Amino acid sequence: MTRFDAATGDERLKLFADAAAAHRARSGDVMTVDVDPDSDDTEGGEVPPWIQLAGTELILDCTDAELDRLKALLSEFPEFRIDELVSPEEAEGTNAVVTARSDANRVAGFVERAFREVYELDDEYRAWVTAI
Image (cartoon, helix red, strand yellow):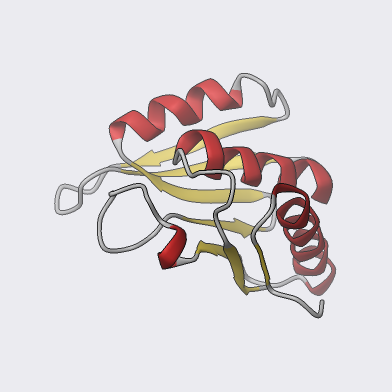
């Protein structure tokens, strides 16, 4: 991979697919996609949204409303399912672990839609792949 950020839908899909394929080819511990802080209009706190891929698992933190939107999105991805939900007492929200048994392109499509629909980011958000 030679580029690590993208700010349009098509560019982000390609970036996410390339990163997922590289992560799997390298048997990396985790692939992390972060939203550029300047693109974060979620008002969700100090840390912008992020999604991690660890093998066949996608990991993301959600508020209650975001978790409801995640569950709605998963209804369109039958090969993906929530495996674990953890809501620590000392933290607001829930950490969701989603099994994603699919190819890199399908994972990329899910990641893009999660940022747009679960976190409700606008069309022009910038994302960075910060770990592969």
